[in-house]
Length: 213
Image (cartoon, rainbow, N blue to C red; front, top):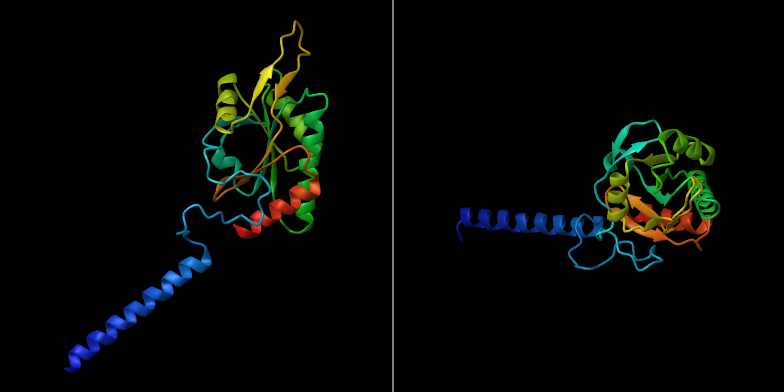
């Protein structure tokens, strides 16, 4: 065997070794999941939802300061997202309070999460009204409203339901779904929480998702 051929074989073997190490790093670091359908958050998931589904998408709304914002402005860190309305007499205040409590529990463990409230009652929930509502519930909470078309759009992309009841005055109620969504910046929607989940449960599950993200 010539010296040049030996060097070529050694170089080829070195390239194969480096390539093998790179593939091993890809698998172990979670950069790429080659096993189609494998859920990286399986140990955290309590629902049958799967992340990166068709839940979620682009939107443009107005925050409590009257500024136009998009999903890129809102989802800068793990987010607990809820759809409701400020005139809601019972369900919304309890759910929003629970979500805020979960955020505080996470903060106690040095995990930063933003609570977000999206109004499905844009006619009454102006930026000023939303501002007072979110300020009361949590200092980090972001309140979002918009035109009817904007709310219809964001409700559609997150697969929520709402319908205002017929009324002759301004004290009408709005029927709506009551799921809370967990959003991770790198993944989008990853999980939802029903009303029977406590603040402790939401905090623990959220922490698990963040740890595995």
